Length: 381
Ligand SMILES: Nc1ncnc2c1ncn2[C@@H]1O[C@H](COP(=O)(O)OP(=O)(O)O)[C@@H](O)[C@H]1O
Ligand SMILES: [Mg+2]
Picture 1 (cartoon, protein in one colour):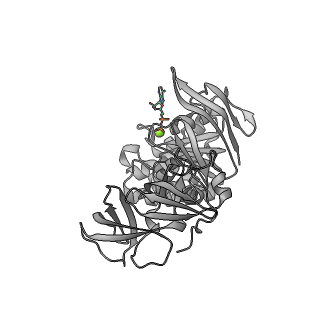
Picture 2: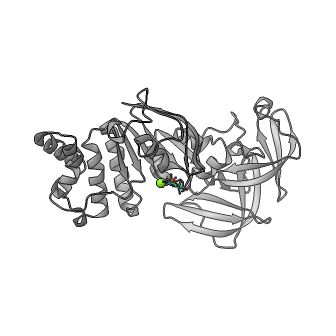
Picture 3: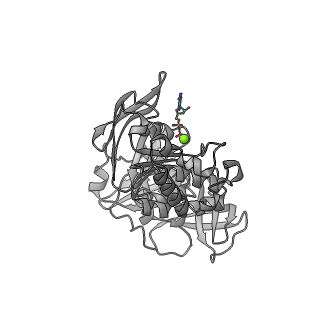
């Protein structure tokens, strides 16, 4: 079990700053998943941790010791890349044994470790093959095996499943979850796949432009995003956003008016409102966020909320559920997720939608979330 700490780390290439002051502490046998748009610095951050890059300023600590000048081989880290990076002329066995041979392990020890890893990863029968004789999934297993045999203190995975087809990704994801429980090491995993992030992570770190936007458990990020970026990044289909004007500020409620004329009373206390500095004022434009599963198609509901009318503009039938996009008169769209048993929709059909006040997220004009304790518990229906 290892501790990794990044202390105000920056990294510039020439005069272009790619990592802009990251502070992060990871410890225990946990899996931290880094997500963020392409180019935001995820791979660079992994390379800084494993020593393939040196920070421009700041410090990388492993187990309490600054490792800025420690070469990669001495850091006890193994990294698995998207590209597999196997040696094409070597057999699977030799690929997995390579790093052990270099570090002077005995033949018996090497054979024992390679066979154990091969068994764990189900590639025992492939040990005599060359990489070109393997499928994508098998190659990725070998790349993971090559990391496992070294018994690293820390595993870094950089989009390891990106080159695999959808079915294989899911299978490998389950195997990685099993491996995570079995290996009990510190793992950092980069992915752009929502399901991988949500299912493998103990902690998700959302990055943008070389900075951390928010770090937390998958469900805390899903239910309590701290800003519009995280709210829009986590969740698929994405959270709906509607602009609204603050019409009234009352002791227990905020009354909002949408462009299309509907009003919505959001339960919020004075204390919660004043936690936002400067405090919200009348007439300000804020953003209301609502997850697709929190919109109901219902005209006669007694539940607090706003009823929007619109026309169905897109329907995606996934078999187990349906995603329906509805265009409102002002041009904004709302997407809702419906269970398979719900009513089917035709394009152009008029619908009425209930946006449930208790489930709404609200973001101030700067895009920062105004947190509400009265927000309905995430798990209630
Ligand atoms: N060695 C390098 N020299 C110059 N620019 C680099 C280098 N490595 C990465 N970059 C730039 O840093 C940015 C972040 O890259 P990267 O960390 O690979 O992003 P991500 O993995 O999040 O997609 C990109 O704009 C990339 O072009
Ligand atoms: Mg990358």
